[in-house]
Image 1 (cartoon, one colour):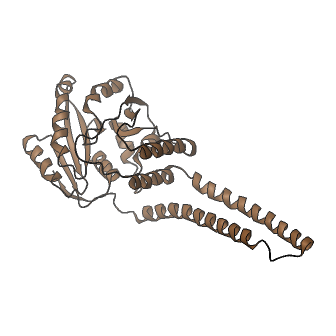
Image 2 (cartoon, rainbow, N blue to C red):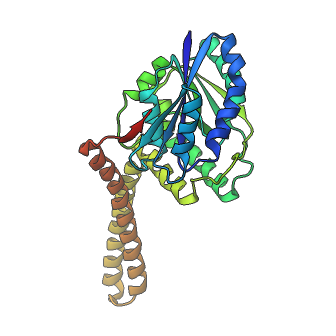
Image 3 (cartoon, rainbow, N blue to C red):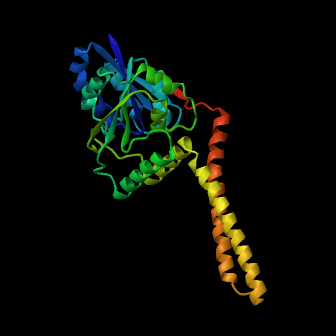
Length: 309
């Protein structure tokens, strides 16, 4: 009998934990037909509500429910990695506990595995229910990544994907501290089938991802899978050096002809301010990469487990 490991990151999701369990069990007949058992790995990412208590209640009545509880909030990326690392299944799927990743898609996803694909991933074809500004910037982000990164990152891609053990082992082998899993999925390669579906709103509760968290997450993604910003900073430096050289020639010639070195100071101040801003911007880009390197060389653990059942 094969085994499916279901990884479910949770952060303050006490309402959705039992609801997800009930919805997932609707596929139990499908798993029996395939001769497959499953384990539900709830990863508690430092929740402050009764999430852990709800998971323990489920474990008491169903031994297939497992709990990995962090010592604090390490983020969804760490939670997904912990689930992948602790999973035992021949197949592994990552799902959101808020049911934005519908369990009803699992039969179709397994059909893709039966066709010979190593991974079956999902992507949203619409962002219904999301704030318009978030949808706009999300699409711009994916379009930008398509042009500046060699790693394939699909527009609207979700973390909801079914993987074979070979794919999971490849991802687990990448123990980088600064994780951007959507990029890692693309970087490891393997044959992937994409399934499209309409956006589904959360079952209960509110999203933990606001605009600023998503912005920071996108910056992490850009710096993790592209060095193009560093090239842009270098090109901007060369460009403004040439501009400065031309301005020096212009000022010298103008002074020799008109003999008026005082006039023009407002434009000079504007030019200095602009170039200073560009320099600080470029230093900021370099600082982002340096910060990532600093965190990597510390070699801290990606997560710490407080309790495991």
